[in-house]
Amino acid sequence: MSNQQHDDHDHHDHGSELSEMQLRVRALETVLTEKGYVDPKALDLIIEAYETKIGPHNGARVVAKAWADSDFKRRLLEDGSAAIATLGHTSRVGDHLVAVENTPRLHNMVVCTLCSCYPWEMLGLPPVWYKAAPYRSRAVKDPRGVLADFGVKLPNDTEIRVWDSTAETRFIVLPMRPAGTEGWSEERLADLVTRDSMIGTGLAKQPAEAGR
Amino acid sequence: MNGVHDMGGMDGFGKVEPEPNEPVFHAPWEGRVMAMNRAMGATGVWNIDMGRFSRELLPPHVYLASTYYQKWFLGLQQMLLERGLIDADEVGSGHALRPGKPLKRKLTTDVVQQGLTRGSFYRQAQAPARFKPGDRVRTKNIHPPTHTRLPRYARGRVGVVQLVHGCHAFPDTVAIDKGDNPQWLYTVVFEGAELWGSDTDPTLKVSIDAFEPYLDPA
Image (cartoon, each protein chain N blue to C red):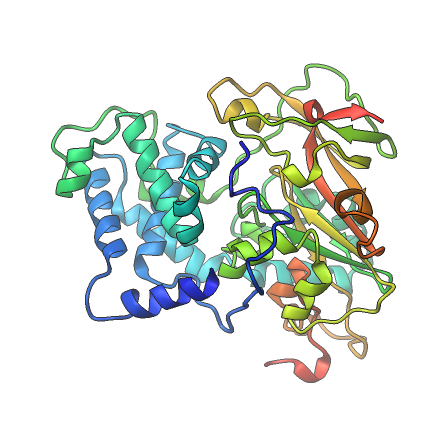
């Protein structure tokens, strides 16, 4: 399905003609605006927030702090919402965030098989693959196969723990801190924390990959 | 409902295809759809579970052939039509033909932050929690024709309670406008073999978040 999506976008949305969807969405927005239900300027601000302020850098800051500050890490794993509230994020994280820790013996992966639940405040809007059928169908049954699609191979005896987000609880993975980063600042560490490492479909970058 | 949205364990959808340097939106209309959903949600005319249910009710062939934001658009338009907030002739003409209905709230620029802030789903408990971490439970074999958050692959299965998340609004009733009906919420962990059979990867464990009415002692 994701191929289909990409094809559609290439054919319609990047072309010179307005796509059918663009016309339908514009029509609906006009109706809602003329009815007085929505304010287009407020819609602009919402879009701008997700394009500029609310993204994986929020989660990366939290992970980097947990790597650097063992007391914060303990509080994060005990009560994710409470610990993150102390950091003063631009968007409140909500009441139901749970952080789960990867170890050499345990790898966590997060999915929403029923729709697309995702920790927006920590990671921004989810990528297309997270919301698409291949990931939602296979993550709970064949997570090692899914990891292979991401180029990730774990030891055969590592326990794989998949968290299906079936309620309003939201999960963020605390990936393993890469070796060779002793004494790094939180800012440098945050650069190693990828979005996928916080979903569990990737690992944190190695020091040699920093800045890429 | 046993819809195509309930995808856990289905085969045949192919490989996961990550997109390098994926943009936040692939076309401007996707952002407008996302923002309209947030703004209409903030007016209080429906809740998040009604929104999910509206997308689950899309015909299966439409659901499977639509992109994520196409589904959001179709669900949004359907909810607006069903509640009489807009009419089909207005959708067709692309303009309001009648005045809007009064709404409780409107998301204006000065209160946009409210539209970005996630509400709390905690509710006052009506009874003590029936289960605690470590308890063995069996999920019920239920097939409601309406919205539920118990996925098919995890029905009638034995697992262990790992976390107790407090008492939450119950999506199964919230989605059909039957009230919050607060219920205790648990993370329940299943062995891979319990869900997928004995030849499953022995290192696999899967959890769902299960509301108390989904569970029996095991």
